[in-house]
Length: 149
Image 1 (cartoon, one colour):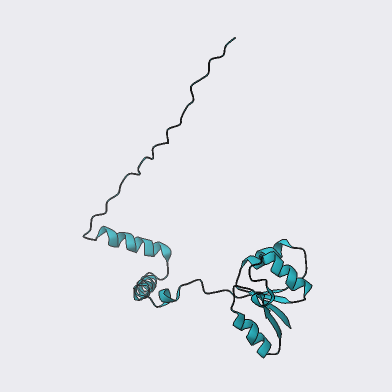
Image 2 (cartoon, helix red, strand yellow):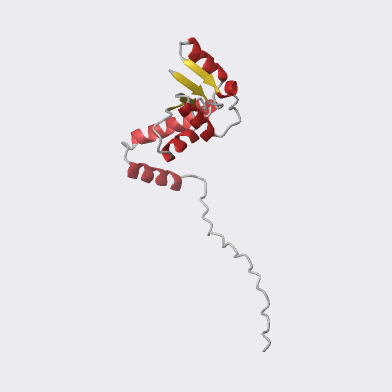
């Protein structure tokens, strides 16, 4: 298979594709590293290559084209930061949420009622403030010109 690896991915991927017996090129290796995505798609289509990228713009470009090629393989990166997955505070919040859901038999109405009762019985005072009025920006009016007859 013939691949064209986009700038969003490492040139090492093209090398690994070659080591696996495929015809893999990276855009840097053919002078397209600064090119627009459309140029890369056109080159891949003309050279009968599959674009490999992590750039989601390629999906949008393909949807707007009526061409049947090139194909695109899109690697999606994990959207959740690595350090957030094992956050002890988030884990504690999730544990409390699961325990509350279990106690209330996964009934959202019962959960809301439970939380409302708990907040009414809390030692802290709940303060409700009226919404602030936002002043409208002053409009600058031009003085009227006198018409002379």
